[in-house]
Image (cartoon, rainbow, N blue to C red; front, side, top):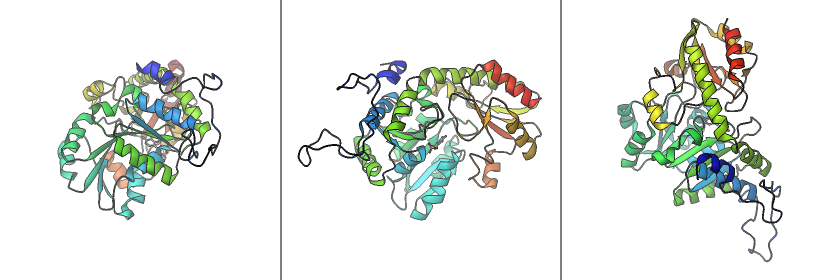
Length: 379
Ligand SMILES: *Cc1c(COP(=O)(O)O)cnc(C)c1O
């Protein structure tokens, strides 16, 4: 089945009892048993729920995975993966990482004896050097947030697997429409469904997709034991959102291209970060690894200090100033003080998350209106 068919059909059957085309919202906490232990596969909704189950099957199919697991947020999904590690184990990740993942690895797990290294993952020597016998997990985000670096998933997996290290890719920015990391060798894929997959800024949820049966068994045990599972109504909303994922991401990518090119030629813009630009430093790799380049981009405003950048991001009319990304509507953000404020300033400066950096999540509106909004704001 191809992608545009999977989003609509994979894992989904018309409801057996009524023929309902849409997966029902099984708003129930528990399920009747005929005699103790004899039931229809569902006992209690933290453990299993039919609406969530349909979504998990659909999501697995989108990533060409055998298994899918859903969580009440992207962070809960990421947290669950860290539960696979033991005290003394180490994580190697990128220095241009989602702020919440950085906060979790550093702020929560260090005190349990799990150390994390944040390096430039495109520097293969640095990667080799930061790996030791304690390294158990390499955490990749590509394209990265907010600077849109692209890392070579296949190459990193080859290095990791020589040393029995698991690789997880946070595929939130790319979506499975643009990139399927498991096909490139990754062991685990994680998503904030809150973003492109849900796509309508109306739900917070996360997911893990994977092939390995024994990892799936462990993760399902943690999912049920820790309990950060989503409700059926939210699962329904994500299932509904997914039905147009391919169309939305096509449009996000088209609009992203127009806006990236417009900004690249604007006299007040210092640089633009979008992997589809031919002068982006990872453009060739992005072309090889991704189907298109998406609607996430960031840019630096020439000579703007913190106040001038604040004034700009607050002046857009159509790009709403807000956290988050990946919805149908365009959003603007200021990474240094919003999404990445939990990263210390010295680290932000060293990585290039400067005060004059603006991040755009380009929506699926008519692009002429979006360009006009940017033109007016920058003038
Ligand atoms: C938003 C986001 C997360 C966290 O997901 P939540 O659903 O907000 O918990 C993780 N990774 C990336 C890349 C994100 O953009």
